[in-house]
Amino acid sequence: MREPNSPSDERPGLEGPGRFLMRRSDRIFGAIMIAVAVFYIWTASLTPVGFLSDPVGSKTFPYIVGAISILCSLFFIFRPDPDPKWPGLAAAAKIAFAIIVLFGFAMTLEPLGFIIPAAVASALISYQISPRPLNAAAAGIGLSVVLFAIFRYGLGLGLAPFSRALTG
Image 1 (cartoon, rainbow, N blue to C red):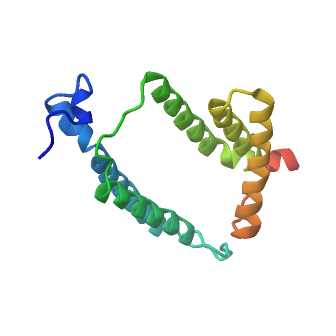
Image 2 (image 1 turned 180 degrees about the vertical axis):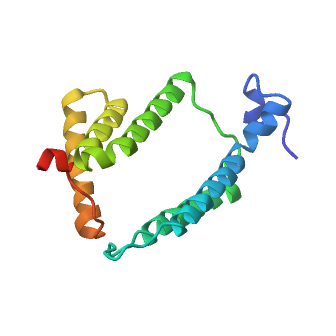
Image 3 (image 1 turned 30 degrees about the vertical axis):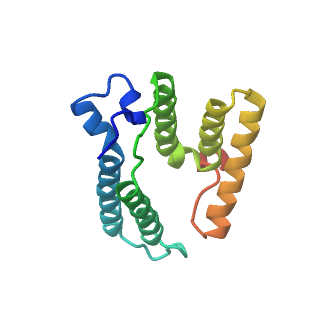
């Protein structure tokens, strides 16, 4: 049984159903992420494998990502934070901005290639962490080139560095 003066009792505005959901938010998040990962793996299983497939494969890489997501989600379910602290409005806005940036990255990956969208997305997110424009731009460019090298040469994925319209 919990002591009456535990730290969670000192937080204002957390009484009744709100406290119940707050204490179970990690488990709820873990369960939702397992469902998303299973759906991701299922959609990867529907992907047709072409004649010229990558060494990692058009199915293997999503399977690896999905499996790692499931393992991480299990951690949230079995080892939840006993007193989670939700971000304030400013932090939530930064998280929402990062999600929008990553969505934009996904939408521009095919038409622009990997390096330009990755550089822009990395720079914008880096700027959110430390608002120094030159450092953010350098981090964006550096990350995009290093990630491209890892995915292309380390994992053997068939990523295009730039769009065909840019390279001719």
